[in-house]
Image (cartoon, rainbow, N blue to C red; front, side, top):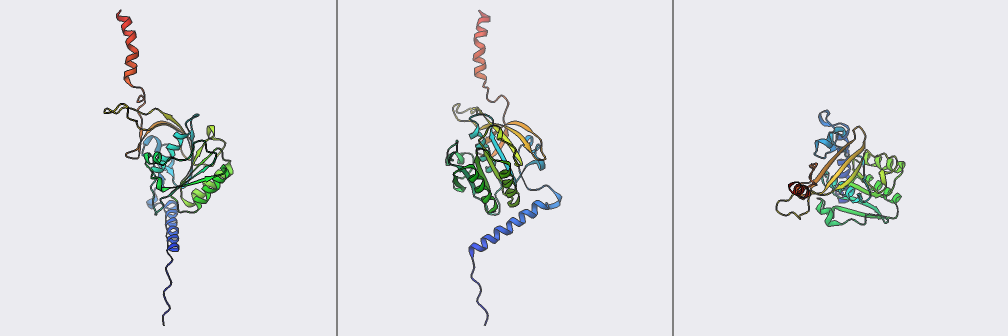
Length: 272
C-alpha cells in the first residue's frame, strides 16, 4: 500500500518561493548576465545616473537623505518617496516598511500625500518606535526578513555601528534601505552607500490654463557622497503623472511678469 501524500503547507511554500527568488537575485547581482552591471536603481536622468557607479543606485544598499536647511525635512522625505515610486518591485515583494520614532518632528505619514507622489498607502507597513535605536532595530529586522520591497526609517541621529549593521543587512537581503535624517548636515560618519541633501524650491506655476494650479514638486539635490561615484548638484522636478524625474529650468521660478512690472517705474521716469 502506498503511503499518503503529504499535506501541502501554503505558508511553507510561500517562504520557499521567497527564498528561491532571493537566491536568484543574489546570483544575478554576483554574476551579471553577459558580464554586465549589477542590479541598480536608476533616476532616469543622465546628470544623476552618470554620477553614480553602474549609472544607478545599488539596490542592496543604505541610502540617506536630509534637509538642506531648517524646514527642508519634508522635502527630503518626499524625495525618498519619489525614489520608492520608481523602485522595480519584483519577486512578489510589494510592501514597504516605514519606521518612525514617537518623537518624530515631521509627524505621522499622510496617506493621500504619498498617493500624490505615486505610492499606494495600502502598500505601506507603518511602525512606531520609542526611540531611534528601536527604529534602527526594526529596520534591520525588516531587511533580514527578505519579504519587503524596501525599508524606510526616520531618525534624529545614528552612530556608525548601527548604520553599518543596516548597510550589511541591505546588502545581504538585496533590499533597499532608505534613511531620513533629521539632524543638520546629515550627522556624523555613516556607512551609507549614498548621502543626499535636499532643499525645497518653489514649484513652476507655468500652467497656461490655470495660473493658480500647483506646479510640480521641485528640489535642489546634492549628492554629498557615493561609494564609487562623484558629487553632483542639480535642480529636478518630480512628475506625479509619469513617475519620472526631470531637470528643472534654471529660471522656472522667476516669472516674467514681476520683472516687467519692476521695470515700468524706471521706464516712466526716463520718459518723463
